[in-house]
Length: 356
Image (cartoon, rainbow, N blue to C red; front, side, top):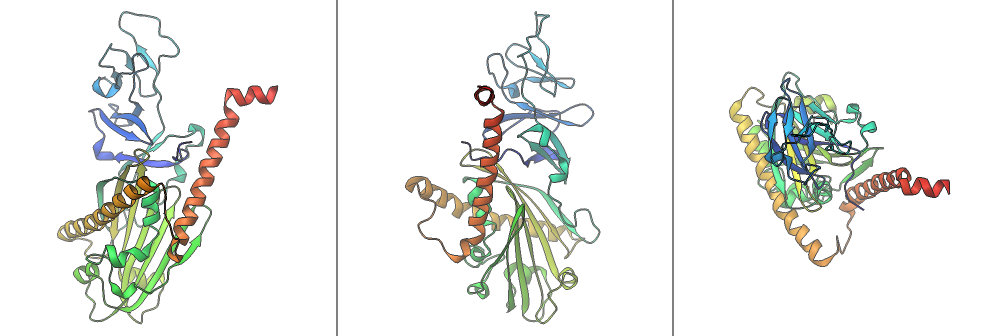
């Protein structure tokens, strides 16, 4: 059984990546080809002609349609074959699979599961997006040489920031501060406050604190693979309320993890902040600092993935900080089992067995 949850919205690309040129990308182990119709709406097909299986991405656009570069079969954005050179009759099987797409938050989202379930209301809400006083850094992308589960586990693990990110968002003050965990129907939250502590490097660079701070880290994981990190600092002694947090130095980092294959992941991210909101220089600095942070994750997770594959073991010892990652794995396993059960029930063989 595939490890992918298919009944979910994944970021396929940033909107600016998709245009009137064919763009090939592998998502959930499937090779896809994207383009925009002349009215600007995006389209996607499996990157495989149903005739000889040539990649459609080596073809050309003819108006809104995609012409295969091998024998000229032409397909609409819905996957229907609309022309076969030299042949008037078009076989019913001459079609390519398409998938629902939605554009939101400057990104193109794809649904690769049951199209009847593709409700755009289930796309995660990005807090403060487009609101005055909140600066946006978006269009960011990294490629991780590890599976998405290892990344989601890392993104509900505040404990690693002390050691992996000591040059950006972590420091020694948090070493012995325990992590609390809460679970909802479709998300897991790991969080902690580090009180009366020295500001971390990012806060030192961007903030204006005269003394110690209280720092928070709220790590949300929205199933199956959208992370939101609510991070910031306020002067020690201030109330730990939403109002005070918004008045302090606060940011929301959204990480959209899209499995490429069983062992590699597309990592799209955007960042909203309430400090230096009108400064292009600050945006450049934030982009660099956050990229450094995520590259540090990518490096250590690639090593973790390598050893997991070599040993066939995910972990030898489980610690208290593994509470949230363990919950995520159980919840995702349930989603996978539910999808597998639905697929089995819908298969012709299952229907014949039920009738018999």
